[in-house]
Length: 403
Image 1: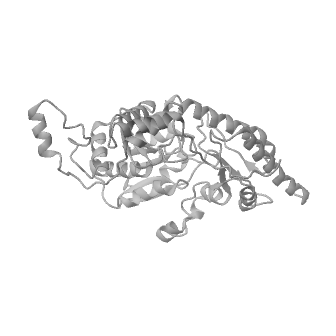
Image 2 (image 1 turned 90 degrees about the horizontal axis):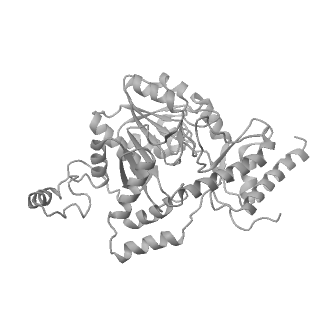
Image 3 (image 1 turned 180 degrees about the vertical axis):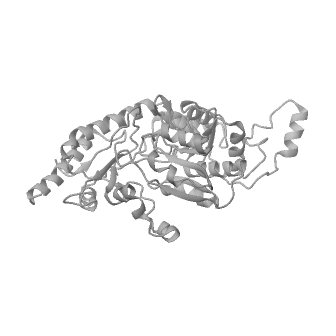
């Protein structure tokens, strides 16, 4: 097969007529601030993931940052208190701990599923440990039963970083339904997209009020939406007028517009199709790449779980070539790759925490050898076949060199 003349990306942006219709509806109604589309997006994401309340924001990172800030406020955490976090994750997961004046404590991850290793958690708990952020990475849930046992035993607060995982569960219970607060991302190339965006979900009404306030400059939650002062009750109206420009805590400007909400609602209408296509594409890749199992570790699905396959992770096994060898070959042939969310070896973290990677052997192995490619719903059959052919060419070269 000839070289494909375009990049096969790790993500996609699929905009249909429905997204365009809903966005035009917001423009025709001259409603760009929080309105019915965002409300529907919030409520639907929350409901699909076992929660009562959803609060939209401008990114999954913002959702995580306000989640930590909310729990710090309600639980009385002090600067320097410790929050456990996996040693392999996108850097935002850990950054939001630092930006809230808390200390991230890293926990090594599983060698097969790449999520936080429950067997390594308890040894990291100290008298200053207040909570934990777990990350459902690449589309697969963490091992929640032992994690929840530790949460209850040590009375920890739990945040689920579900930015890479939606619409799947663990043991029949959806991701996002285990934690005090869960955080989703709808950034470009995620499972569903709004362009920019994120949502925090919770079953705690107090947390919901605080999260809304934090995302709106710390405003008194009596007035968050421009519809909040539309009431025929004069006493209630005057109370709102008195308080609607009051700010009760230090907050942020994390709002998004109805246009993002409109795109998200349209995307949700196709969520089952999106998930099915990703899973089918991943299955195709696995079926045709398993012949190279002596050289590369392919993604596995945990028992009792589904996999959403936001991406397709691969780890090079010890042997005759490096990750950089195969990554450079794929990139040269227009197959985009990304490293598997290395964290503790990032230059900024080496400056902050020192060279600690040797303390986390599985994470170090993944950092040195792991990468991912795309398996999103826009990849065509021709592109899938091309990917398999190029992997075959790479391994044929190895064979020809006597490996």
